[in-house]
Image (cartoon, rainbow, N blue to C red):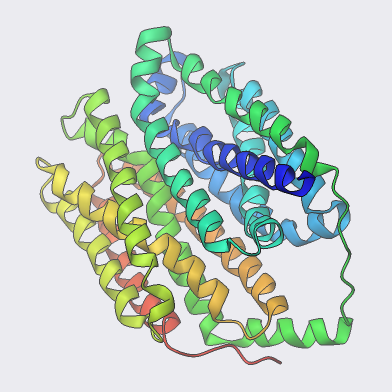
Amino acid sequence: MAKSKVTWLTFVALILISIVLRPPVAIVGPLLDQLSKAEGLNQLQLSLITSAPVICFGLGAFAGPWVSRRFGINRGMLAVLLVLALASALRLLGGFIWLLVGTLGIGLAIALGNVFLPTIVRGRFATRVGLATGSYTTLLAISASYAASMAVPAADAFGGWRTTFAIWLIPAVLAAFAWLPDSRIAEEKVVSSAKQTAASNRAVRRSLITWSIVGFFGIQSLGFYTVLGWLPTLLTQQGQTETQAGNLLALTTFIGVPTGFLLSTLFKRLRSLSFLAAVISVVTLAGFVLLWLTPNAPLIGCLLIGMGMGATFPLSLSLIATRASTAEQTTYLSAISQGWGYLVSAVGTFAFGYLREITGDFKTSLAMMVVLCVLQVVAGAIAGRDQHIAAE
């Protein structure tokens, strides 16, 4: 009975953790105009705030294995949730410095949470990995979509951007309390041969598969966080109201939920994922082309981008999980893919905003995304081949 109760509590904690790992970032994009006016932020500062979390996602991914070895996954996840809550509170102080410090803390916490979640799922739900994984990835998308859609209405109804930011303190605190029992569970330490580990990691670094996955993961992530951070501003510049822009962002992120879930059922049935990776990348590409060439009719472009991105994220995770030869390689491949991938994403997200700053509109920024999506098609086609990284 005790074991059943702990598993149930862990599942509740997993739900709460999934709910809180995207909204602190998702709410920023719709509120950029309000932050600019209320806090006197310029375009460069806004670009830093939107790109900082993604930089942290990369750095945190590299740090994940060390944190896990040093403190353990269980205590590490509790620390993630506490830092997330504290950093969210710091942003409420306002001003560029506190907004940036809080955003950096949020980014690092979410980065470690991203790394820890798959391990937690494998360890706690060994017989229900599919259900647990499907639950948390779906909740990540739904919570991001909901947070984006309610950001502006909540700020308008309750007196400003601070209210929207404060709302997402609640699930972070609840998740920390829910995870407390699991944070006390002792963990086994696995000792590996240093020579074997070095040889295995070297094989990962030297493989074309690895760097094609890095490219695929990085560009699809770049597209997602660019949309999350800049789509509302882009749409308001094209004539939409703040509320309309927030709703379109919510639609863009939400439409990917059923798309990604349905397509993910095909991943294990297909030996080669090259064609699928290329096709869904072309869908994203078509969406950015429409936003670039038909700015007065953003709905179809947003829908295509949402469907494409909703499928590329779970596909990129599937590639990371299946293209290595051993479990140890999978962990290292995950660290490289997320680490470098998110850093690529951060640079691209910053460049998207900076190009708008120096040109005065988003045309050049959208052209950049079109070019990158073409590269994503190529990277996906290579990464999706029915092949594996050599064991050593």
